[in-house]
Image (cartoon, rainbow, N blue to C red; front, side, top):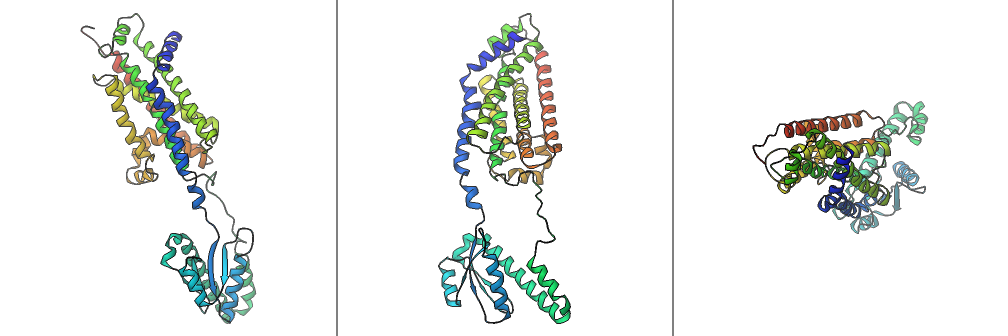
Length: 381
């Protein structure tokens, strides 16, 4: 068995095509992803909202002034307020210097410009702020008219809006970059590319497909021993290649794929094992040669990666809504989701389900592949 593994490793080491797709291609693609996504996270972060405020000389104007002044203080203020006349505010709005213009009165009014449509998120936040301000003013006035004894309590509640609230994150790591999911799917694709090694094992153990397999068929060595030894070598070799790519993403590009490192490495190994077993099973089907089956396995892997979200980030969410069972058995989605679980969730229930499913798929593919190769009989070789 040891000699079989050693010889298989040497053959894999000489296969430059396999090494390119397993090691070089994911590293190059991951670098491109990093370059493309590196500045997007910063551009999406919410900054201080510039706003022009027009005040009236009454209670409402004074209340609005105090409110926006408090929200404009501090190191990272919510608002960057400019108090000015209505004409000046309109000019600032038209020039795009502010995201909105707020006018005081019995009801505060927000005006926005189509020229600042790119800041529609900030405009929506301003609209929510104005609506909240109006609701509080109405509540305070109603309280003072009907229950003046409670006015002080209402004012105190308005001044401490978070007194009875605590911010709790549902995620283990709420700072995970939105685009990290693409790197999870990239690792999933690299793991499934190990299927090429599985195809090689299958083809080189079918006497009618290669001369090497013909010599193995007439040898005294048991077919199952040969196959298992070569599968072990393939899984080990492909795991080492994927591990190099994984550490490049985690510690050179620092894209955050190494959450709970031991479990992340386990996900990588399980993914590689699934890829090898998938390729082995597929390689036992039909009478096509190595090149044809390798091309066909590529054609199979890419749709799986597409459904898991490699090309379109929200594709997996869409598939989960339409046909959730698809990604429950899609190896690419299971591998990517195992990395996602480690970065997001506290528990390991979902992670364990993914790993167990991948292991069951591996056992199924290897079992069917060995059964297929052992039943093969040849009239002549």
